[in-house]
Image 1 (tube, rainbow, N blue to C red):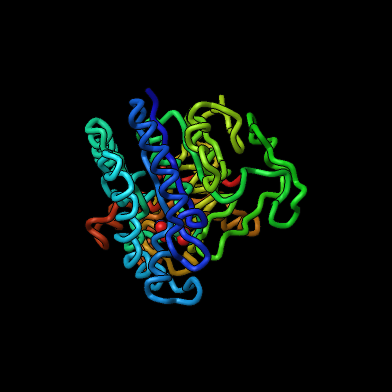
Image 2 (cartoon, rainbow, N blue to C red):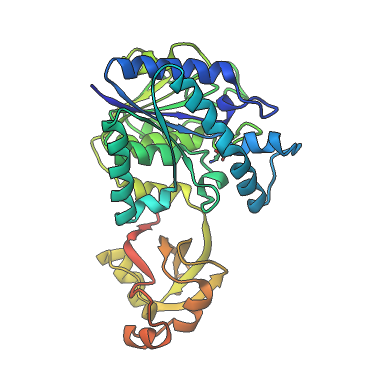
Length: 367
Ligand code: GLU
């Protein structure tokens, strides 16, 4: 029996006023129960905490300030989870609330912990109900609406299918919100087919995803050999039919060429917060030998970022051509203090610092 990750976007979890769409949740949970009864494992990834919190706090529009979004999520999360818990428990299926962050899971020890926990829950026949831990992480709030998190979860537990449920029928040849006649793309075997399409980035007033982040999430999953489907979760029977392999929404087939999902996330989903300018030696080492970036190669630091943020890495020569993007191990302020220093000098200034400014595993070259 297989394992499916079912992701529910804000637009189908909550209506325009932020009230839970009880009919949609009940229908999805009923299908989950049916799959469960047949021995299939399902992991739910749900958005909608912010939407729910907005309603409960009577906020008229989605806030823009990050602390307000995070606080709205904290208000909404418990109530959101309770809906799933009650719907599943009423049909005899126990559930567990799991709050994760994508970046957490890319750190090896956290990754292994998350995997063990999820595997144990599935062994116990408990359905995990996952959301991003919005109190500490802001990636999926900024862009993604849990699409990347769902892809990462699918990879983590080696799922057979990632099903991204939204309120439209799948990927169309143009954004159906602007062109109602644009036909549905039923299958994608090669992402080159998708490049020419006008993929909507428009989102519902409640969430932050849109079709683009779903397509990238599908790319992440299929790059790991997992099939992905984007389909309309407001229609009855969507989950069962997608799992059964029937024509449903847009089905993305596993790709032959594998790319790490972390690197896809870094390239497409993670916004850069600043820029590190490097000397010629470091530029060549990054481009040609795939090494890590050390503080000694850094000549300039732009912006105000924290350790763990994504930054652009650019060459001092050649009009500052961008070399790539990486997760930085220092804040901008620390990096300004240690730029140009050999590792031994760095340790004298910042004793607990890591050797690399950007580790090679957390770096992607620009296209
Ligand atoms: N984790 C967020 C939530 O559940 C993601 C949705 C969003 O981006 O609005 O509300």
